[in-house]
Length: 126
Image (cartoon, rainbow, N blue to C red; front, side, top):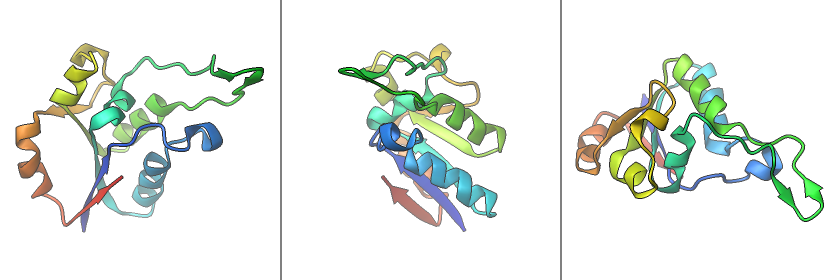
């Protein structure tokens, strides 16, 4: 069974857990033998940016000692041959250019989403 994880809500629980829960779950399911791909859309296209650094994250006097490393988590999925897609228009709306992305991210226009969705048995939208 082929599953597409659509991640649209960005940075969910990344302060408490230091990982995006869906990216983490995708790693776990892939490790258990699942065939999955990821589609980043909306604010989650920010996950595709290679040079991210949340090490200076602070709230008042509290400092995040273990900041999220989302780009490394996404790059690790790519190393495991998990396809990761990002919607072109969502990247453009945020001023993100293709040369800023993690190597291996596949971009596709919003108009081609239906064709992508047809390739999967299940779609999980987060």
